[in-house]
Length: 206
Image (cartoon, rainbow, N blue to C red; front, top):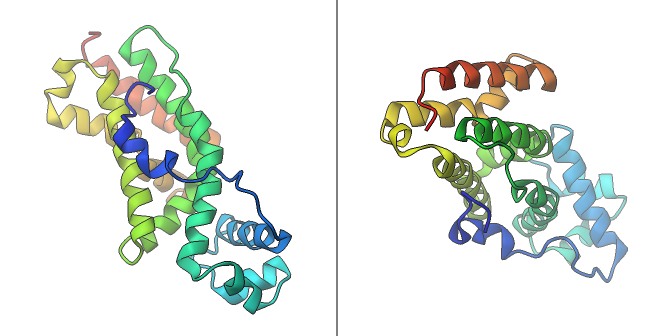
């Protein structure tokens, strides 16, 4: 397993089908794609009628393929994880822990660009959906443990410092820069990179 991503933490993801499951009906794929398109375009809690309309199928068809919206949400997330997992599993660049933290951020920029609408949706839905809660917790745990795996013990021993590093590189920081401040991806990434560099200058090299 890749550094910082223990098997136990990857379980909510790798135990799920990866989107290659055979579909017997083309409308099933249309429904999933329609659901994802709505979320990606800012409709964070699409209802079944909107999904059916976007997919060009009848409402009854949605529930013929999916028992409920929770089931549809789960399968959409399986497809999303199939997109994101290869990036998450990439080896980090850099010989020092500081260089690898920069590599973590470069990797996260790509991931956050893909998952931002789903993470926002998951934040809204997490307390009413076991699936959403599991996905959100797994993402946060993986992000936290990835940094723990690279930081030296002297840094991890300082709870304020290690928490600060995790906050700088977090999805929540990214969301604030992109959504609240309205920064384009390139500028948001540069802000985080600048903050990370300033913080790392104050920390030991090993």
